[in-house]
Image: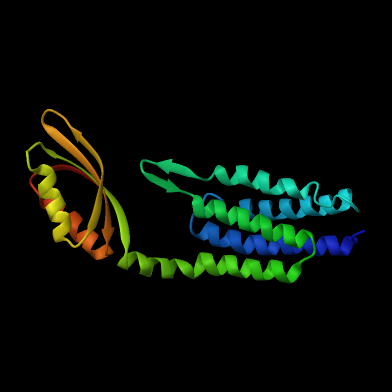
Length: 211
């Protein structure tokens, strides 16, 4: 039987470590912010405690096993797709990781939970700078344009992409009576992509640009 003091310690740690991750998420304006992350942390800890208590001695994972499923549904709620972009995956993964840490706290694994929380914060706070450095060297962007219909419209734009030192894949092509629309997935240095977009803005053929 888990003592009352031990239960209070576990809830307090769930509040503390969930709050630290939640503060980072709130600072970045994520949909799962400070209070949400704390609630997830305390809830996962409580479910784990109940699972250990009610399931003892033979089925201590009876309730805890369903936490992963429940967190999966919660995480799906913060993922959304806008046009060709999917947002919220990192936030969903953070929710999932916080729940895992809280389950560890609820089960009494304090050191592994603390270290896992440290790694989560390290990933969220420090690694974005590494990610940004990688993106400057190898950046991806979806570019959509609508331009006046000419026989060499596609060839002209793709030549400009190559001249900018970028690699590309044509995603979509749509021809109307007077206009033609193209979508490319371009890859290269972030600076080169920005320069290419500036060239497109000055191109008299281009009537509409989305990127």
